[in-house]
Image (cartoon, rainbow, N blue to C red):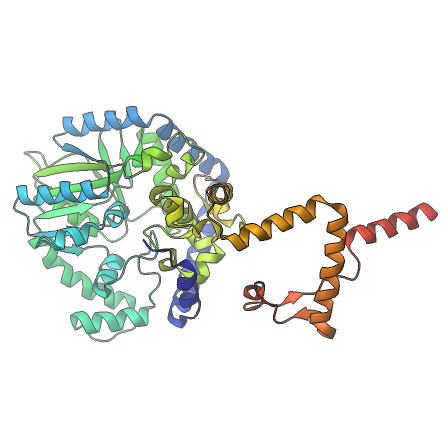
Length: 470
């Protein structure tokens, strides 16, 4: 990952198609979530219950992972462990060779986006087809997902129609249902020809060794049940303790992600097909990846692992609403991505992401498991400063600011000088259209109001003087 955040932001802000897609998608996502959460008896109590479920899982993570492994094996499945992304890719590549796999259909999976599994398999001659509609369109375009739940949120329906026409020969249409019907016809053959199905995991229920996936299309169910080999891939944090926890979390996932009371397909897999079952995979593997997650446990950022990947914080974030997901530079965009990316890759690999937030708190208000995202963003900013990340100019500026704020005399003098300078630049309008460097970045997007003629302290002093005279 390269740190091109500033340049990517400028490109995104000037992309008219992207701005149209973001305005349509995020507005709809926010409104649908509000309506769906408002239908519950007590939304705050439900969120708190979900928070406790995730806390229990993280507090007992090693024990639950062992319990999950035992029960998956007891159900006839196999469990494999990957320390990092490279090991995950190698494990799945070895499974492909073991089972003579040539074609793979793949359900939605953020973990395999982390590891860039598709590239690893394709480099070894294995055909990989994304089965999620959004992921498939992104794959056709040679792009990466821009949203955790809506991979193609950055695309308008008009651009999608043109892509499908160019790549697959679809007759031009502006109706999403026609596009979906056309892609469904293409995908049916892919499912029937696939030797292996791969999917992510929304929840792994430790008490029974059950893998739960959530979707609206049925593509994931076909990817996991039609091929003879099924591989589920999850991060270590996806495990939960009980079915009661699942019952709480799955309804909040749907309401927060898409504004539904419940997703259309809630798939539950407890091993390969039995002798008396007509369908399902002959072999089932669960691959559990760490990739830096265990380093986060026990730190002040541990609650970031409670995320259920609903995408609600992305939809609510004013920064994401304006720049989309690709500007963040890696798999996880938005507010949660601004935390997870520096934690998994290292803070110096993504030094600007913790600052990609107004700290308005909309992300935390939308989060179904009450993750304190703004607090962690502030802590990451602190860590970056302590690591010496800011430029010399920034450090000098902050030193001057701190020196002035510690001295009443310098503070008052600075206020007087700033007031005279800004009023001179603003003129009669009272607003500055262009500030000199290094402050000109502010006025590229907005006006800067001139300082008032008298400070708050001066006005308060006069007011108290008048009250004393009275």
